[in-house]
Image (cartoon, rainbow, N blue to C red; front, side, top):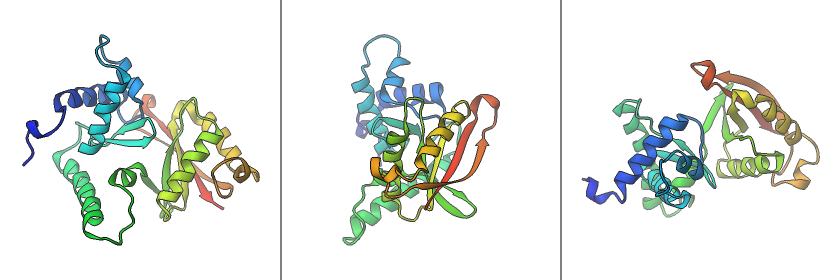
Length: 212
């Protein structure tokens, strides 16, 4: 049975987790973003990145890109919901350990691709940030599609305030030359869009793009 003594840097990790949740909620964030929220200069971005890496291993945080993270288990959720997510991670690890013919993706790779369904089809989540351009989003989308071949495409996700930014990037991902200048194998096709959220200050814009 795990105790606090068997979880490396658990006190620092919990502090980073609570800071990230209080500052960003369900929105993505980077190690530097979290470090900026810590008073004083005792916690550098590299220190926070180490703690976030441990939190990914603990199953409380998901890594969604090289330096982008998102809360996986919210303190507002029930213990039942936490157990369901823990069970998913345990099933992945059990498959990789016991099945020598299993696809050798790591457990963290499995966690990287979050699927949303639209008209019954799964779409791999790709989070779009203010500094992203079509090339960086295409690279992330190509990686997501490679990791989950069942996906019918990708769903671009961003805060509601960045909907126009997402639309402009999506337009470029649907052009005929996208495969020549990015990692995508073929252009994508625009589908439905949606805005979700419980309040106007926490809206998420979603745009579904199908593989051609």
